[in-house]
Each structure stands twice: as structure tokens, then as C-alpha cells.
Image 1 (tube, rainbow, N blue to C red):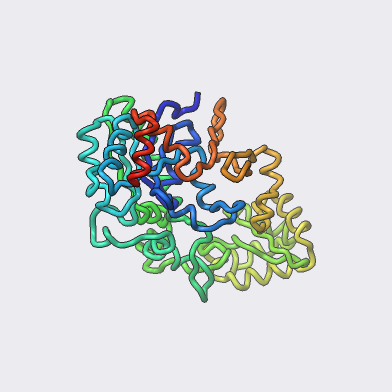
Image 2 (cartoon, one colour):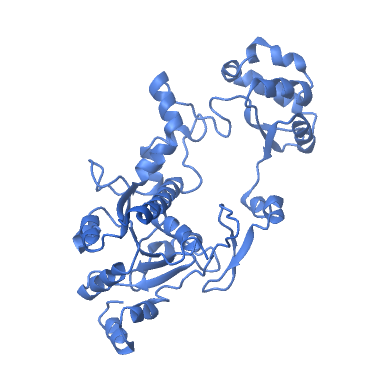
Length: 392
């Protein structure tokens, strides 16, 4: 039995954040009914066509869900949604603030009808404040939380290379729903949750926030190097390949100088005696390290780092990550079904003893509409009528 078997989630969702939360619930065995617009569906279906014609975003975020097309501007569509919520455990939505309230499905309203229901609203900036109605997409939240200001090179700020604001919001929605389900087991009562991408990524910005608030200076942009620890970042070997390494304490620093640089005297150089000294003299430190690495291949540098017990990594491309020996050795790949045939997928990060994640198929738009409506009492003739009327 999967941990969330028997839990039904109704998801009025699109894009990334809310679908990421509900996909993880589906992996744990929850039944997730994804409500989509008739004709077009979740607009993430059209973000790209990278996966044999399917959107890479949609494939990532929507396995294991049932797709129901539903026109919520039609009174019958609203009644169908209410019928679904009557039998649901969780209602997740990430429409614009106020949209579900106008439909009659705000948290207070639906929880008054269904006290055991857990509602989770995912938004850009939350349900109050001057930014409440401001449009919010991942890059824009990265900008507003200051992430872009500390990411990139000294000359040019940069966005993070993945949808980090959406992922943060989705993770907090997911963990919040799990906590609410646990609470309901003890109290019998549902809960109303609210997660904003701004608050979620703001939490992840806590280290630069505290640094700036209590020193008056925000961390500098330092490309792939750490802004406040040195050496911590990429250094070229003699063959041109980059090796990333990290020194976390003074014991490691001494060991690094002795074994890797083979220059024990560098450890006591006044310019490099402490981490703040090394950060202040970062350029001189880099010159010492690069001179020592210049006569070595990347493999030789890594061998010395391993011998010294110094953390290190190669900068891999995405394809090299796909081919990573660690993924193969731990059997982290599986296959999922889709409208275009089997697709490779990584297993979820949490490995739970005795539990095999559901990893269901990617749904075609509206693939489950008839079956879901049948559970609500609609026969074939009634479903055909709904189609004719543009309800589904």
C-alpha cells in the first residue's frame, strides 16, 4: 500500500508550482484529478515540444494524474467541480488571487460545506498586500526576492537556471498538505493552506538576507565561486578542465596545502591564515592554486583531492548528468507511460523502504473525463450533452 492510497486530490492547476506539489502526491499513491480547460488544457502543455512532441515541463510535472476537461464558466461545470470536492480530501489551486472565490470555491466557503477538506492556494505574492494582484512568474519572483542580485558574475546578474521559485512554492505546498493530512488524522478537521512563491523563495534567501541585514553589505556575485568561503569553486587544471573544490574548515585547509598543493607553507601565509583572510585575498589565492594545478590533469587533481579528503566535483553538462555513473549504479531510472510511448524518468528523491512510487502515465488532455463523470452519475448520453454544450 502506498502512503497516500485512498487520498483524492482535486487540482485546479496550471504551469509549474501547484502541478509540482500534486505530482509528488500522485507519486505517493494519491488520486489526483487535474482540471484543465477544454480544448487547450494546462498552458504548460504548450511550453515546448522537447519530449517527442510533448512539453518537457508537462512531462516532468504531471505523471500519474487524471485529466478532466471542465469549463468553469458554465454553471454545470461549477456543479461538477462541487461534486468532485464533496468526495475529495485535498483541493489545490493556483489561479489568480480571487478567482476561486468568484467561482464560489474560496477556502471558507468550501470548508464550511466540507469540513474535512484541506484547501491549498498557491499564488505569486499571497492573498493580501500591495502585490496581491501582481502577475508573478518564476523569473519575476527571483528578481523581487533579490536572488538575481546575488546570482551571476560581478559584471552581470543572472537568473537561476531552473524554475527555482516555482519549485520552492511547490515543495512548501507539498509538505504543507502532508502536514495538514497528518493533523486531520488527529483532529478530524481539514485546513486552509496558503503558499506564495514570494514567501517560499524568500525563505531560501535567508542567508543573504541575514548577512545583508546585520552587516549592511549584501553578498557579492561571484559566478561559480562561493561568495563568503574560499577556496570554494572552480579551478582549471593543466588540461583545461575545471575542477570544483570546497574547503570547509581550517583542518581541511592545512591538508589541502600539504597534500594537494604540496606547499605546506601556504597554510600559514598571513594572506590565507583564516577563511576571512582567504576571501579578502581571493585573487592571490586563485593564482597560487592555479599555478599548482597547471602542471596536472583534472584526473590528477581529483586524485590528490580524494587522497586529502577534500570535497570536489566535476562540472558536468546535462547530458553528462543523464549518463552519471551514480544514477546508473543506484538504479535511479525507470520508465513512465505517455501518449507518445514509454519515457525515461528519474525516481523521486525520497527512498522509502518497502514503497515503490506510483510513477503513473502522463495524461492526454481530457483522457479521464468520461470515467470521472461516470463516477458522478453521468451516463453516456449525459456526457455527450455536456460535450455538445461546451461544459467538458
